[in-house]
Amino acid sequence: MSMRKGIDKNFLGWRIGGWKSEYSVGMPELSKEEEEVVEEVAARFRDCSRHSEIRDKQGVRKQVGRLLASHCVESGLEVDEEQRRYLIRAAVAHVYGFSALDELLSDPELEEIAVIGIGAPIFVYHRKKGWLRTNCAFENEEALVDVINKMGRKVGRRITLQKPRLNAVLPDGSRIHASIPPISSYELTIRKFRCNPIHVADLIAYRTFSAEALAFLWLMMQADASILIAGNTASGKTSTMNALFQFISPKERILITEETPEINIPHEHKVKLLASDEIGVSMKELVADSLRMRPDRVIVGEARTAEEVKALLETMTSGQARGSYATFHAQSARETLVRMRSLGVLSIDLESLGLIVVQRRMMKYDAKSRRSTEIRRCTEIGEMVPCADCSLPKINILFKYDSKQDAVVRSNKKAAVIDRACESFGMSRREFGAELKSREKFLGGLDPESSFEEITEEIRKFSFANYEESIPKPKAKPAGIGFFNSVFE
Image (cartoon, rainbow, N blue to C red; front, side, top):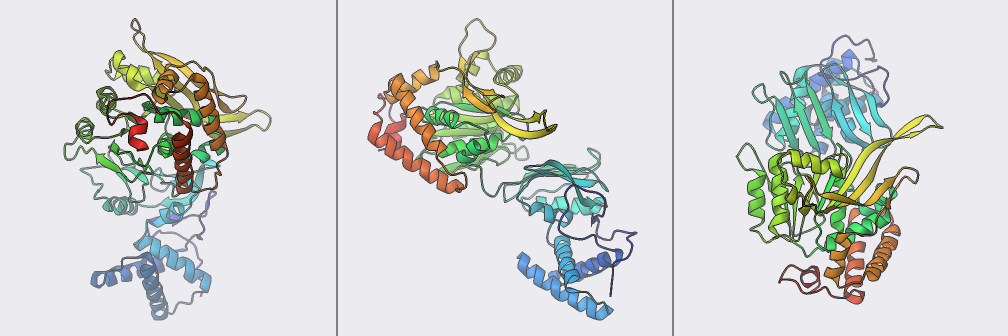
């Protein structure tokens, strides 16, 4: 029996549509009769689940298959094998998954999923193609709210008329933001978690950083420099932060304070502290707590508010951790300082920032092909230079993006941070330059096809062998502060 007739009513609240789209999911548009079948099977499944709980997707799939077969026999319906497969997929997505979003969530090439309203096509952000219009949509408010709350339930959150906003991180690391009237006309944004984290070899392969720039940051981090990664939205700031921590010894104790858990570094000895407005725990309080926990490094997630920025600078000026790190929204190193100053930060405190790394998401236009491509590039690496008579510290730009070369290149070899690193390592400037070249060559030889864990292991093997055998010990520091006396004992 064919069930492919016209569609005049949507029973499921979501739809795989037949309209023109730039991204199509691998499921056909359901007819009215097929939607009725899926809804009937879903209703039977809900009845069954009241008596026996099915926890895994495979179990749900088997049960849905049995219920579909039973319904077809009772109703005298004949379905071919292809119909049976996609009806089961649709029913599983409806009762167990996230309906229209299931097919999109399973595509590793998608970075973002955006529901922009009821009846409107869902948009996705593809890694290589940018924003694309899909052939999926939610058809009624209840279906979308049900999916939002199904996602929020996994982390104990719920969206209601009393609480029309929801921000959460799913167990797999994906971030969701949703809002309903009166704030919006129903929207949902999902920033997907990358299953295979970006590593330093990826950053080089994508041309986000040069091997020289990463080698420089590697040395700076081991010399205990604090680093702020600034950039615009979705520029990859957090991914770069995670990758840079591949340079830090596994023996160090890392304290992470965040509002939204995003940092995922390759260290066993790490402690995560989460701020929460709901229970009255602020970032400032968590930073104060972290400094009582003998951290080697402190990460203050994303600094957005005045309180969070001041909390970050407190970790830098307290001197209790060897290095402090954060991400921040700004388009340049100077804009970073201006924005922080506007949040009430003193100019003298801004000097403690150490290094500002700017990474931007921007469009690259090819005049010959008339095509624009979105790229992510490190555009600046700058150090803070104290200036007693200035409203802001001066910025010494050490690396700068060259659009002709499409690469971040060295712009100034003179830097106070290099002098401090040489003093810490007991090196001359010439020895520092040789070590920088050695690390640049090593990073340039890494295979971007390797896993995050494999790259981390290679970096650690290189670091230990290199430092134990060929690099002089640093000058003495107070106990527990120096890089070498805690890492390589």
